[in-house]
Every structure is written in C-alpha cells, then in structure tokens.
Image 1 (cartoon, protein in one colour):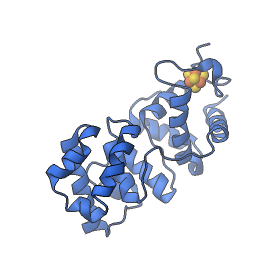
Image 2 (cartoon, protein in one colour):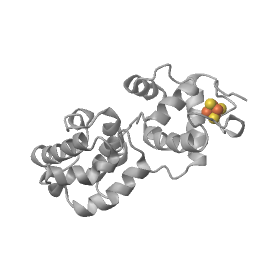
Image 3 (tube, helix red, strand yellow):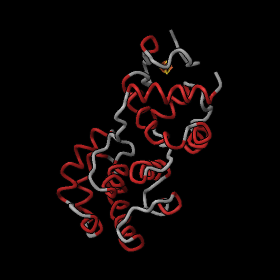
Image 4 (cartoon, helix red, strand yellow):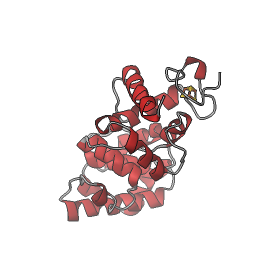
Length: 209
Ligand code: SF4
C-alpha cells in the first residue's frame, strides 16, 4: 500500500471505530479551549479537566482572566504544573485577545501564533475545533502512531504536521487527530501496543505479532 492508501484506510477505520471525534478537553467557549490547551502542556487532559471545572467558575469570562490577580491564577492552575509560566501566558493571551482581536479567537495560524503561550499544536487545535478548518494536531499519540504506520519518519511536531498535511484529506484532518488520540490510549499505546487486536494491523509496518 502507498502512504496515501494507508492513511485513507486509517481515516476510514478510525472513523467507524470512533464516530464521535471530540476533543478530550472540556470547554464551552472557544477561549476556554485555548486556556485548557495551554494548561495541557506536560499535563494529562484528565487533570486539566479537573482543574478547569473550578477554574472556569472562578474566572467566568475572558475579561476575568485578563484582569486576574496573577498569584490567584497561579494557585488555581498549580496542579497542571509549570503554573507560573502557564498563568502568566493565560493572562497575557486573554489581554491580547481582548485588545487586539475584540475577544474573539483568531481564525488564522499567523494570528493565533501571536498569542502568548500558543504554539502550532494549540493553534491547529483551535483552527480545527473552533473553525472546522484543516488542522493537524501533533500531540504525542499522533506523532508516535503516524511513525508506526510509516506515514512520517520525523518526530519533530512541525515536520510531522507537514508530512500529514500532504496525505490527509483536509476535511478529515481535525477529526482524525482526535480519533488517533483515542486509538493511542485504547490500542496503540507507547509501551504495549495491542497489535494482535488492532484494526490497522493489516497494513501497519510496525505490527509486532
Ligand atoms: S499494528 Fe500495532 S503498532 Fe501498528 S498501529 Fe496497530 S497497535 Fe500500533
């Protein structure tokens, strides 16, 4: 199979297996997704969801994040780790969103990357989930599994993103990324992939059994 055929087969099979491709971070407002994604760096989505459940009550609007007392915000996000850096960038990003973008998450990669603390991974997440634009979210599961499927030789997120943008149908890319995360947790884990019970094993070059 060519790479293109492999990726299309993976898209189809994972779409059937995980029809509800939703982000594993909980949020109601787009700016809340930006904050949750910022907190998820070096932290599990499950822990972020526990923290944001109270954080979004304590700071109920974008303005309240922009006006936040930094020490108070740091304390609220402390369980996510790197809390000083994360709190500062969240406050700064909220201020920039309000002053430059009228409180609306921008819809281009270039603009998103001007927000403090926002890298390509979060920018892709926002483009895909908020604006339903083509997006390749290169989290650790995605990078590992794309490598195992022989769809990229790289591990650097931007290079993986570039390789997969050439292969993935644009309209499927964002949902596919969410599905790959679920698949990585269920089947193709980092340490013990369940190759003998994997729906992609027929064409996976890394199958071990
Ligand atoms: S066959 Fe194994 S390595 Fe390949 S995708 Fe499936 S679980 Fe992962």
